[in-house]
Image (cartoon, rainbow, N blue to C red; front, side, top):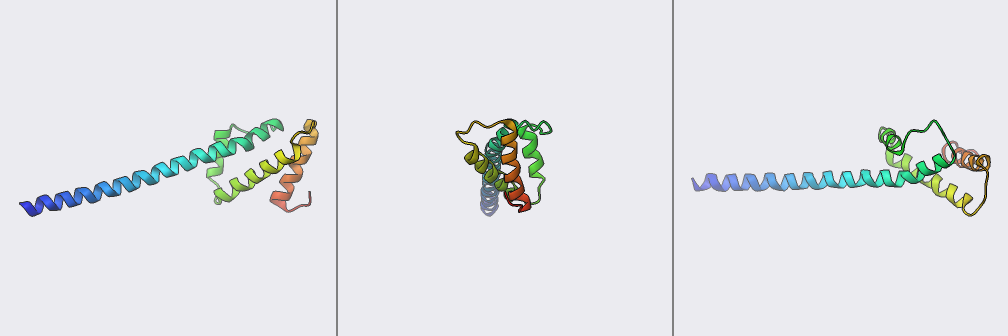
Length: 116
């Protein structure tokens, strides 16, 4: 009888360890997704500034991006584009058309390799 109790204790302990590891992985994934949404809001804010009316809200955009095959690469490209856009427009009084032109140049350079 003592052996069975030890086996049950060992089995329970092993299952508990696996559950804890699984929960830790899930928490890490959720934090990563929250971070992605927060980082991507910067990109979405620029899109709103440029008045791209065809865009969905930031949560929908992030949802669409999660379906991308190379999600992290795609998000990092958009984040770099956002940083470049902010760098090029910071402190300047630009019209909507001028802002869109700057963004278009960054977009072409980032995704299509076209000269800015």
